[in-house]
Image 1 (cartoon, rainbow, N blue to C red):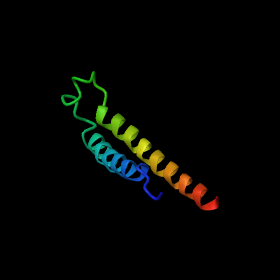
Image 2: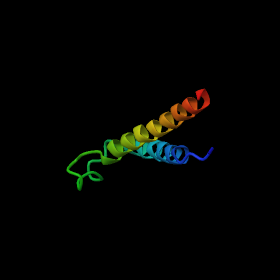
Image 3: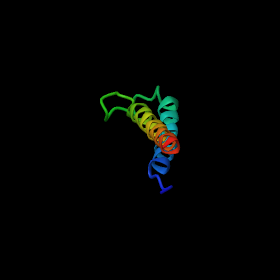
Image 4: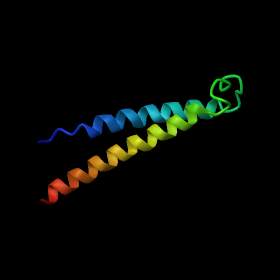
Length: 71
């Protein structure tokens, strides 16, 4: 069957990760914004995490498709 849920999930997390990472980079110097998170740039950390997860999902989807073609 050609339906693979990893592709839309990977695209969603990758796109959202890029947006949140850019937001974290733009607001890096704003100490008032990150006061509640004890001064940590939570947007940057969560954006990078989502970006890595989304790329991992897309990568595993591509590997799975290659494996199916060889069989």
